[in-house]
Length: 243
Image (tube, rainbow, N blue to C red):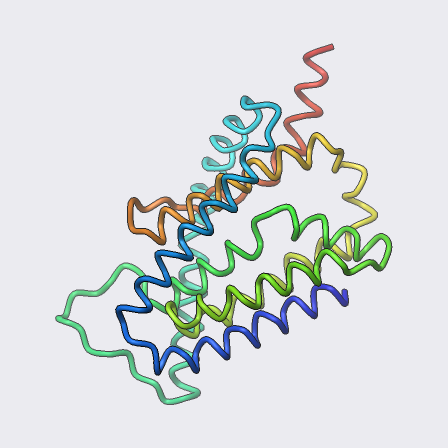
């Protein structure tokens, strides 16, 4: 799990640097940086989405994944985790949230940072492929490359979204670590076709994250997360019916 550990440390280091910059960066710069990040996230997502060779697979997985995610209330549970971490963080460092006009926001900035960064770092082919290579061959090159990208983006995410970004290191460790440990079990299920459609579905989820960051709409990306795993089931079943 060397690659995953390096990835986690890169997120923590980048996020810590971003928090230092947060105090010296004017609000107008943070807004522009966030918009730039959102556009970059959308570009990354579009590149992944274009890898699909089976549009029906993508549609079916998104719809089925959305139904599963809504039933499990994945996004609200992630938000609750982020809120619990925020309260713990405030208690430890004696930070108090700034006063508002009395109207409670549906999601705090801390939870927003945690959820956004977690989704960006966990959804994508590099996390899956890199973790498999680490588990099967002890090769961490892909995760090392991912770590450098995540570390740089963590600087900007933390400078705009705050300390919740650092907490995203936990789901990255759990998600990539689990794939690494189970690599020999799941590797036979991940053919080139499955990986292409997984990248496509994950790419669309990343586009959704970018849209959320721009404030264009509110897409519950967390509840769509199961869709990224469904190509492993869809393609074998579709192949049986094709025969």
